[in-house]
Length: 88
Image 1 (cartoon, rainbow, N blue to C red):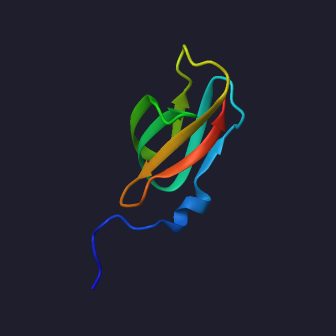
Image 2: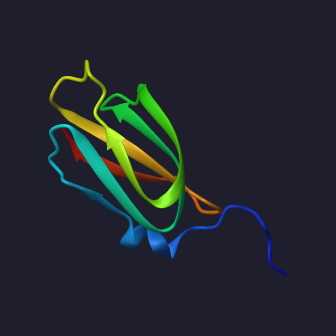
């Protein structure tokens, strides 16, 4: 019996976030629909969030974001979220 619950995603290996390091924005590309992008600092504090609907999405750097290491959570339709390390 199959479940409609969130499933681990083999597509995680094909989700790309670039350029990395970035200056003004990131491009997120996925083989399944991206539904939300959430940016966290290195301590796990949520800094920014965008609702999305597409396979490719542009994530703008927040204006007051200092250079450093961050984590971008990529949520896709029907799959577990994925954290990607990014450098601004």
